Amino acid sequence: MTIEYGGFSTLDIYENKEYYSGKNVVALNCARYGIVYAILDAAYTKIYIPFYMCPTVKQTLEMFKINYEEYHINEEFEPINVTLKEHECILLFNFCGVILRNKIIDLVDKYKNVIIDNSQAFFLEPILEVYNIYSCRKFIGVTDGCYVIKKGIAHKDKKYEEDYSSNRVHILFSALEYGNNYSYEEYLQIENGFAGAGIKRMSLVTHSILGQTNYEYIIDRRRANYNVINNLFKCNKDIATIATAENTVPMKYPLLVKNSKNIRERLIEKKIYIPFWWNGISEVNSFENRLMCELLVLPIDQRYSALDMERMVEIIKTELFA
Image 1 (cartoon, rainbow, N blue to C red):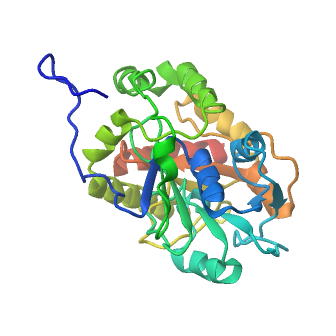
Image 2: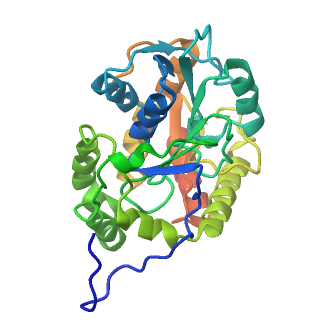
């Protein structure tokens, strides 16, 4: 963009304030394209991906004609029966951001050629020997953006065009003033727009917002909210939770309950919006099927206080035991 002088004020741009920056970081438009960037950078010939993950990853691999094979996971979220050949890699999905870093390190030691999908674990410290993918919009008020991090990563991003977020960012303001439900249909249109976007450099708007974000507040608020919910649910024998360590910063609180579909629908009437993970999954084992049938992922983000969490849990318990 050509530098202009004068005129009206715009968003302030602060340098070196983003959570991730430096020579080991490539900033792109979307996590699914970050995965593709890593595959192309390493010249991997095939990637193994979980059956149980967002189908947009598989669709994007097909778009780029990248050879892939799907694998199942066990109850520890570990791959089942995956053996890599030379120049092949595996995508490890950090479900909800609750998988501990030490466990991921063990899997990296086992498989070597690894891409870690931390799209649901923005604050997990990267393991620099392998590729780490982070999604900004799942944790911060932006409409796009991802980081690809690896020691010595090649900065091939300069050959890609820059993304532009100005035609998307307005939904953040309308959601702030009118509520998320007001902008939901437009949000879905924006989500669908990523399908054919391809690899792009992170937009200036997204860089700007990320450069002035209070990350410590986000970390503290998410941890506190997670702990509030965990303390309210952990003693209930009719509810299963997926545990994590206190020093993690999850994206959601994963709760396993019977008849989650009906409960999810009833919660909408109470203005509690819980997504279903995921449509379009072709095959599941018993544990993955349980996730699809019983999982409720509760919001714990920085918009909410401990009191909000207590109110939400009370409503959910009322619906569960009505």
